[in-house]
Amino acid sequence: MVFLHVITSMLYAFMAAFRNNHTNYDELMNWSNFCESCFLINMILNFFKMYQPSEQFKVIKEFRLTSLHYYSTRLLQDLIPLIPF
Image (cartoon, rainbow, N blue to C red; front, side):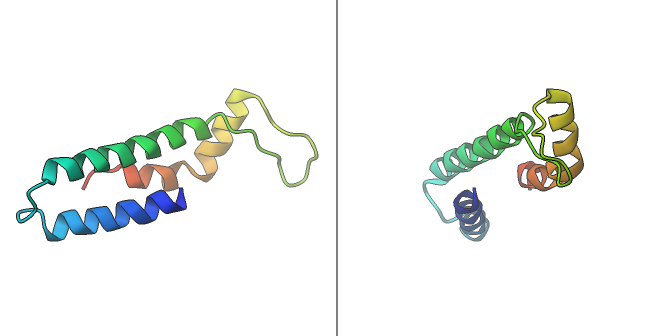
């Protein structure tokens, strides 16, 4: 995911700088949509990811608890890249 963050940052900077001068703007938008889709899929999959509380040895697998844990920890960080500019 770090690689995808770096690529999208460079892609968005390029699109912002050369939006009117670039002839393959539709191709750049396709790559942008692909990256956004990867971020969305990652965000959805994180709702199902098991976790282990720091004070316990038991792994939490229940969907309700894993989704609440994701919601309270990393959801906002994963939602920010999906906000359109």
